[in-house]
Image: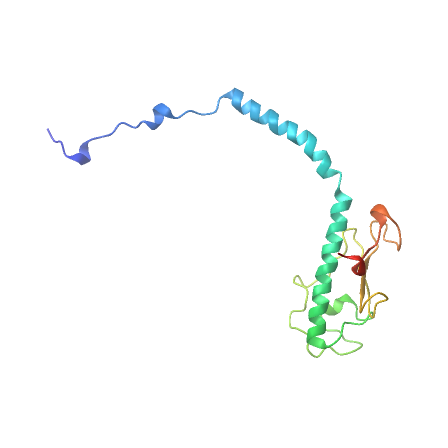
Length: 157
């Protein structure tokens, strides 16, 4: 008989102690998840306008950051006529942008529209600050309240 340690086989105990989930346990988990979904989905789905308003605020803040970088490189903000497009391509009219950064100031190379599919309004010099950026909300018209409320750069927190 050969009793070398490498020839001794240990009995595998994992098969004896391992146990899967029973059908009842799986059903309980599914019922709990279903109950949570019934109560949570309407709350989440009922706020798409709030999500759009938040996105517009975030977009305006990103545009403000890009405008500040533009001013650092060029000494001034783009004019109203040059618009936000001056952040993605060098302006061909108005004050020159001698220090314009290669690649622009917007990461994706395109000025996004607001969440309702409208262009952001840019005014420079602005009425409230060096520049004003406005999204007219869901109705795309100045003024309004609720879902139609304007989102303005000078009102951001």
